[in-house]
Image: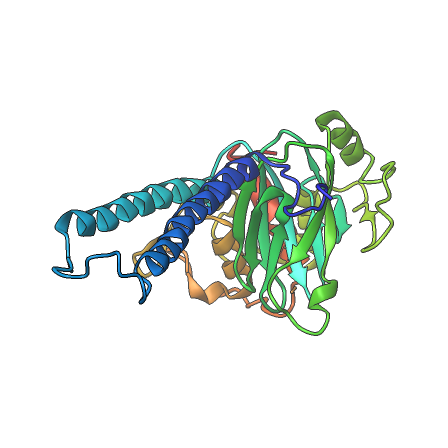
Length: 333
Ligand code: CUA
């Protein structure tokens, strides 16, 4: 009876720290719960109505030492938990360096994952063990939440916004992948799995285009699908050309004066209204869908908006392409 799975396995570095915090809070709650429970029982018995052995005259109704103790002790404990939890929160959600990046797109009702080398997977996410992973998460319809209990991480997939989450898988194996935000009729079917492979096996798997995995990737939720031989950035270049972006951008003979997109990624972009924005995923995405929102200083609002004409998959490819032009060397990959 002792192998009942009360908690999921712990399979990430961050998960270990979060589990320790979780059990520390649980232990505190049990200790204080026990103090209150036994206090209630003890007082109820000792001061029961027919107990004439206790002296009820001159009852004490306040004691500053007791008041201070039960105010300051919980305050200090709560502040320690706050600082501890804030540190773990920052580990998962604050930007970190040296990661392997995957793009996750939530849609009704499946998870679509893309690797930088072009491999795509549906309802399966294959990751290397022992490496920091950045998941860039977005939704193409309603709000979903990307949750991997074994890693103790989750993040909302919000339409129109890239949300990042960082974690380091430690143990090779298969883990649950859930949507933990009610997103419509088939929310409960929006499940999949995360497969963690040892680094060398993962590299071999990536090079084979996501094929030939010994484990059953073809079971529930569909298997890995190779994205051909093109990397994500190369797919982006094709999309770039297919949409005709190259008629103005990346064309030295263009009659239209356009900002140099090789200088977009990772740089500070001066805007016509005097503000400066960072050339990140959010800026590139907005500038494709709604170019008029943030006009580059010195340029006019000439580009047609692509809202409704490019899919989230294509946006992820285009961003990877523009990132590759800059070749800034930031981040992992
Ligand atoms: Cu997607 Cu619930």
